[in-house]
Length: 208
Length: 279
Image 1 (cartoon, chains in turn yellow, blue):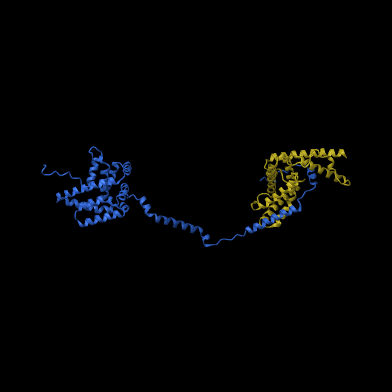
Image 2 (cartoon, rainbow over the protein chains, first blue to last red; image 1 turned 90 degrees about the horizontal axis):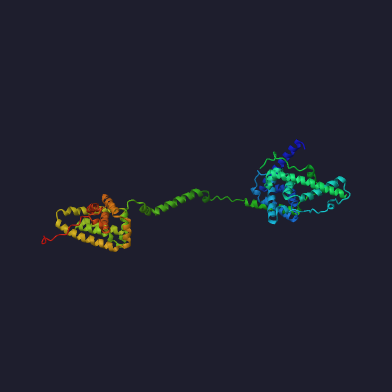
């Protein structure tokens, strides 16, 4: 990616962040359409943040709804100086942590898949799909499985990066850790996912 | 908050990112969306209802600070006016300590406590009508307002002193008549001392003795003499004579002082007359 593209992307993100704050301020003044825009913009990422960390869909939806409820309730206390997405995902993270603390230890709440899951389950159902589409789809399924095997903290760092587009510094701010620890989590997650997807893909290819 | 322009993006491989984007994207159900938007609408409506602020423009609310300040000043001023006498009594330096201590006598004796000075004065004055009227007036004042007397002893002392001086002036031409009257005074004084002694409880007497020493009593007597408060001085002399009999002893260190002061206030008791037949 060229420097110009990176600057443009950064400016674009900056503009998006500013627009989020403007929308939030407009909602605070009673503009319901501003909230609808804000909701449509962030609902998918936040929803997947919960669903892909928690195996229980119902619980994920409850936490998702609870997060938006808190946003609505705390809208009056929202400060325009804080980035909206950072604020939103901090609320989400705190709710998740509260739930995990109340239910079970941090590192064991997310097991969508098991190690013994058969590699056949990752094969595409449509036998007529083109080869490239087949490979991409299969690897995406493998990645989904590998993500589920990640430790919780690494999984959260990945989801915050992928879904919210946060940098390591922002992730550290949201989850309340140091920048070095966050970078370390990202590095380990990246390495683990690459290894896991490669191994699983080899298994799939050997079975073909 | 960390500046994101400086912060490096998280280091996930491009291939991983592409694979991640290739996944099916879970989205919340329409029911869930509607529930959240409904909650947001309700919150907006509620906040709009809450934002209707009725501005209070009443006179009392607009001027609450000046009014409350004025009310406070009025309250304090009223309290000071109501309690003016009390504060004056407490803070006044004019009231001698011994006079305050002698007040219970007036209460116990119900007017008799103020009698000795008046009786003596009456005896000194003889049949002088004017002085008698003064004495009676003084006597009446003391009965009705003993505290007021205490706060203004100067006014009371003047007639008594004048009558005393008059009696002294009269004693020169006619010593024999005076001698008889002095005997009467002596008897009256002694009777009064006894009555005072009997009217007081032993406890009160012990308390006063504990509080005031003979030297202090003489100091007070001296101050009364200097201020020419003769009526109070007479009372004090009687009290000292009763409470400190040791002062009669010539060996007492305060004897000379006591004698001088008491003679200034009350004419010294004459020696008993020796009948001419005994000489």
